[in-house]
Image (cartoon, rainbow, N blue to C red; front, side):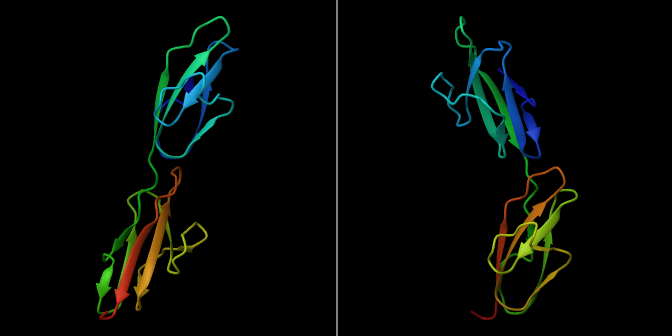
Length: 160
């Protein structure tokens, strides 16, 4: 079996199609690291690859044996996780917290109510004034990349 797009590094989700030169072949595949067999899932629609995954596939056509196994490693690199400065921790005075991201063109979104940030959350445009104990949760998105993982920064203000 062949893979479209070809295996390799990507920055966003890929819809991977499998094909075989025999038009009547049945393709069996796995994404869990095991070798495929005729008892494995049958390929019938593109495989959505959101995280780094290895796809292994075999084909079987009437009158032929099972094909050699094909393997494709799809490495998905998401937007970098935002960085939080100063570091989360206990402070005796208010802090101005800055968020940054190493991925070019990234936009950072954050929350302070413990909810998971999304692109509908507050967009980061400058330092966040933290004058009371607060947890800042942030994520980043960049054109052509999957969203970053969420980073958490718990700031305790006072002498607790």
